[in-house]
Length: 400
Image (cartoon, rainbow, N blue to C red; front, side, top):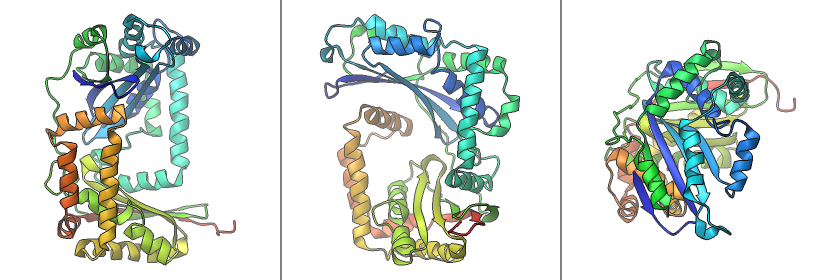
C-alpha cells in the first residue's frame, strides 16, 4: 500500500489498481465488465439504492476505467469521499469500508445488467465508429502489425459482441477480483481504513516489459466517406521507450511539432496556409508511437502531406524557433506543478515512479527538462519513422 499522507485536500482519494495482460480476445469483454462493475452490488442491487447510499455518504464517488500500459491494461477503481473534518457530523469508517468492499468484491452479476452493459457499450462503440477522427485513427492503427497491442483498440470492438457470453463475464470478473492489486491512498485516513486495505493481496512490485513498436513498413490506405471534411491520420514509430535517455527530448519534440501553443504544424498548415480545420500530434508513450491528425479539405490533402514532411524536417534539423522550445518546456513544467494540486495526479505520479523505478523529484525533473537543448530534440526526432497513413477522404462539397 502506498499512503500519501497529506492535509492538503478535504477528500480522501483511493485508487485500487489491477494490472492485466492486454488480451486481444477479451478486451471488449473487459470494457463490458467495467460498465457492470459500476452498476449494482449485492447489498445495493439497484441504481437507485446506490444513488441514495452515495447521497447519505455526502456525495461519495466511485469510478472504474481502463488505461493501456504497453502490453498490459490497467484497471483503475477510484473512490473519493469527504474527510470527517469537512462533514457536519462524524461518519464511522465502517460505512466507507462497506461501500468500497461492495464495489471491489461484491458486484452483482445478473443477466439484466449484462444486457444493459452490452447496450451501453455497443452504443458507445457505434458513436466512436461514426466519429470521423476516431475512425480515421483506428484505421491508421489497423495498418500496423496485428500482433502488436497498438493495432487493437483499448475500447473494444463491435465485431467481438457475438462471442461474449454472460458466463464468461462472471468467470473473468472472479479472476479480476482475485488478482493482486496496487493500492494508493491520498489524504488522511484512519486506522480502520488502513487495516481494511492492508488485508487485500498486493503485488510485491510492479514490473513491465518493453512494448516499443519496431515495424519499419510505411503503409498508406484511403477510404471515402459521404462528408465534406477529410481526415489524415499518421503514425510514426519513435524507437524511444519511457525509460530511455532520449525520452524527455522525445516528449518535447512531439510538443513542439503539434501540441504546444502555436506549434510547428499549427503555424505552417493552419496559420500560414489556411489548409486545415484542426491539426495536432500526440504520443503513445509506452508503445513508442507518435500520431498526427489533420482535418482538411480533400483538395488540400497532398499539400498538407507535403507540409507535414517539411515540418518533420524542420524538427530533425533543429531549425525551429527557440521560443517554441521554451513554450514546450513551460507547458510541461506547468503540468508537473499542476499535478501537485490533484490527489489522483499525486497517485499517478507515485504509480509511474514505482512502475519505471524512477525516483526523480519534481524539482530534479524540471531542472532536466529546462536543460534540454535543440540538439537533443533533433536527435530524438531523427529516430521518428513513419509507419502508417490513413486518409478518410470526404466526397461531399463544403457547401453540402
